[in-house]
Image (cartoon, rainbow, N blue to C red; front, side, top):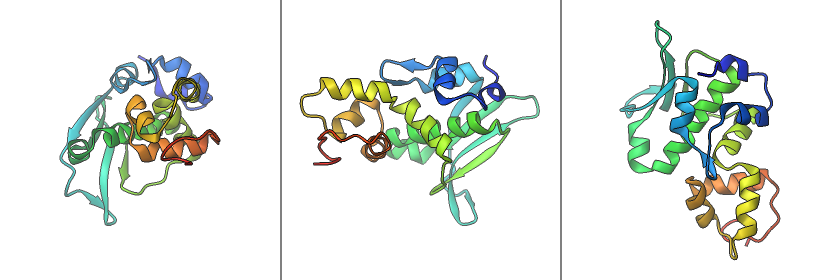
Length: 172
């Protein structure tokens, strides 16, 4: 099992190499959880709010040191791809902060480091560029299917990578 606190000060490429979580083109979130000793479970958070904002995910560590990410069950039921992003965001927050507990509400903002870690977990830059070279007519829809993320996530990732190629649903 990997000590999360050791990851906090590593660069994102070092984190990715240390975690050994790559599965084909995207991260295996189940394997990531095992490597970090973190369970990931759905929970009915439908009526849970903080400061009027809906709670979509919570990370907790109990008194025995067991760690768990609880994500909003209705998020998964309505959109499995969005649930993957939310879970990856929770892992990124855990890895970058080393916190023993935190809550993620709808509309929360990731730090730049957390955002880049989520991008690398779900759409690693080298994999995105490789896939784009292989596709005759790339679209955000096809990339979303390949990387198992929502099309809006694909758009944000391509923008962060400063992609200038013609991609349907992104820049043409």
